[in-house]
Image (cartoon, rainbow, N blue to C red):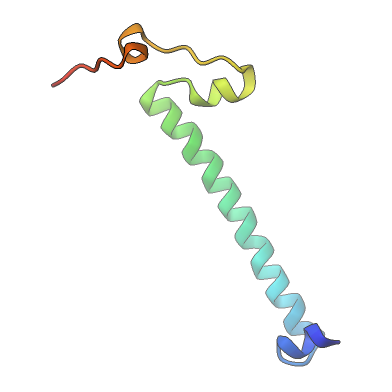
Length: 70
């Protein structure tokens, strides 16, 4: 019962906060995964595929630390 007192004294407010926090985690997870795949697609650096395969393929210049200056 001490948890109910922290959230206003009834179980409905505890359930409501729990529901909001759970949806917050779900939305954060979906947005996070989308942004990770989008970044990998735009940068073409193989970060997401390396998560699944264990190998990351890089261009030779990038591996040596050289970058094209524009």
